[in-house]
Image 1 (tube, helix red, strand yellow):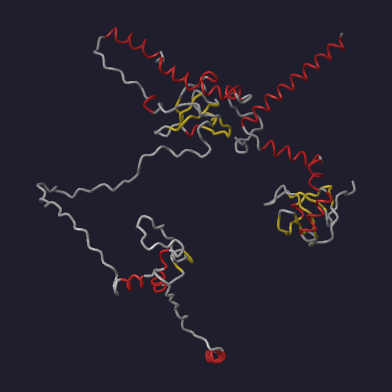
Image 2 (cartoon, rainbow over the protein chains, first blue to last red):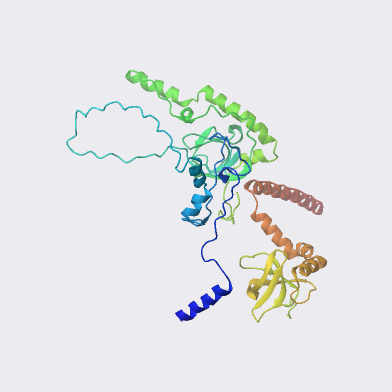
Length: 277
Length: 134
């Protein structure tokens, strides 16, 4: 079998004169190296101006390029760089390293080897916001005092919680924080451009720190109770300013006001996994 | 009692199972006892089991296995799309699709409209009742 094949080959190679060696490399002697990109060629390109070049070696499969090392050497024009520099790669002077101050040996060596904790480069970020939730989206709150209420989304705070408002006049939901997980985002959007929510952040909603009063038994309790029940006037005013602009844009859409005033509930025959919100 | 819708070349059928669920296709050839060659302007011609098809009343005039161009022309001539959308079956499907795609806000608006309509009907009924008793 083997011999049969070789005779076959030899006859073939006799009839067709045929270089089994790779094709001769054609070196084009047109001016400076092509690797700068023939079209946008500028000899004196400042390093900043160069467009980052995509890989010249197309990937066949992950980890395997089309061209061999020698081919890539030629493609990148390293031969031209060498030629320009007289047969070797151009060397740059090393920047003078500032002499580091002499380190003193430590005064104290711990008796046991102390383990260093592993490096943690995670950054604290607010929870990733669902793509369906954008400023002005109507959300359905699913848990808590306001469950079922349809509410307007204003912005996401740095803690990740969503800042939300009824508006208060329409459904009794004040400026409030709500967790993204306890919310269904509907596809209904309200125009929120006239509303300024810059001043609201997590601190605004935090518990008020009371100044420590000296212990004066009987009077102490009464005074506390009076203060806690009322909402400070400036918060009421904030609510009004935010809602004023919102209510204007809500009333421009027919039925939207009564929609926001009504609670959501599942009725007979509604299948949540089939409902489009 | 006798059959009215026959499997034949040119019969329009509705796909009731599989990747092309809900599409209208034309039976273009019968392969064997269980399968038909089926074609539609928006799909590649292929085989389908009869169990996946539900026959409709619509039939178009084509020869066995026409080319796509002829098929599309024949479908235009027979006005399959409009006939389907006007038929009660076709209309029902359109309504089902619309209902499935309703927004939460849309459902709310429909509820308001239903209540309003019922109110109007009840008023008229009350008027008529008054007339008959009076």
